[in-house]
Amino acid sequence: MEFLTASFQVIFEKIFDYTIGAVGHQIGYPIFYKKNVDNLRKKVKELENARDSVQRRVDVATRNVEKIENNVQMWLTDVEEIMAKARYQLSKRADKLRLKVKEINDRGEFSRIGYRERIQVIGTTIFTKGYEDFESRKSIFEGVMKALKDENIRAIGVYGMGGTGKTMLVEEVARQASEEKLFDEVVPIVVSQTPNLEKIQKESAKELGLIFKDEETDLEKAHLLHQRLNQGKKILIIIDDIWKKLDLEHLEARGISFEDDKKKCKILLTSRSRDVLDAQEIFPVGVLLDNEATYLFRKIVGDIVETSDFKSIVAEVIEECGGLPIAITTVAHALKSKKAQHDWRDALRELKMANPIEIDGVHEKVYASIKLSYNVLSKEAQSVFLFCSTFQEDVDIPIKFLWRLLVGLDFFQDVFTMEEVREQGVYIGRKTQSLLLVVRR
Image 1 (cartoon, rainbow, N blue to C red):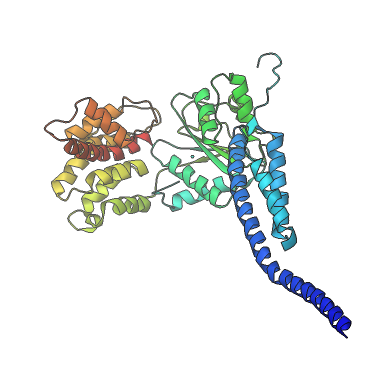
Image 2: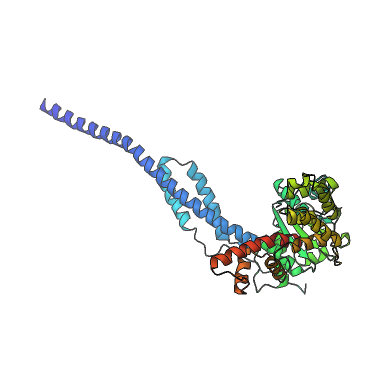
């Protein structure tokens, strides 16, 4: 009997041990499950951050027409594969997967992402604040948009005398094209009076995020720009304010050419003369209709145009602007703070008596309006305007930078503190800025 009792006790202890072990395992499983999964999630997040960082460097290298290193591409592939597995992991595999994620993350340190391939040389070889959707502009706008969507049209031209609003129209076209996702990238370039192919090439590269190296030859730069333009993206290049004929073959020699030009990329040109445009579709931009000119002037000046004492003189002032948007906005801004009739009559007399200098592509009404706008400036603002004219054409002049130059030149008189100098400089700079923008357009 004692023997059976002892045997039963041994068997009972064994069963108890196994039962407690199994129960303990089941109780501990959720604890280890949560710990393993939490650790895995943490490592996956670290890997995601590392991947995003490397991908940004890859994007920069791609824009600069660099070949991505094989180890970088393999690492990105490994990342995507392991992250896909991590999304569907089982608890028992979570810890092993965490170690694998960590191992891939540790390999994500690259001193170099990409490189440029050497080319084999054989022989010698840019949105529109202030745009108005006027009826006189609708057909032009719609025509340009239709041409941009036509796969058989490579180059489109817009022309008209200075001051008709070609640049603003084209900028609105670019905005609309981007909104409709017709293009992945828009490259605005201002040419002005003397076409400089090297400048056009450099600005195109800059807008595309392509950085040329000093040691690269002209041929290498052209090759790199050509590659950048033919990476499969749809690109719109806007070449604004052409004064002399710009042969597209000369642009191609600088790398501005497309292998699949009809389907992906377009060139949009603007000029004051139709004769200089090398394009398949060309659209003329004329002056505003009378009601459009009145609306634009009234929008800037305000309700004074509706008062009986001013109606006749306002109508004459608008007529002197010749329907040119640039003349209308310039004169309106110059007169909007004037409340006395004699100021308006003096302005009207000046507009009528202006003796315009003949400038190719510039309407005499534009000259008269700019002269009026200049004359209403203070003597200090006029001096600043003339000083700005010494800068290179089409260069941007930040007000703060201009202020520093004027301080260095001891321009400001009768001011005694730096705060007074700063306030006067900013005030004069802003007064002059609107006229500078008008002259630039």
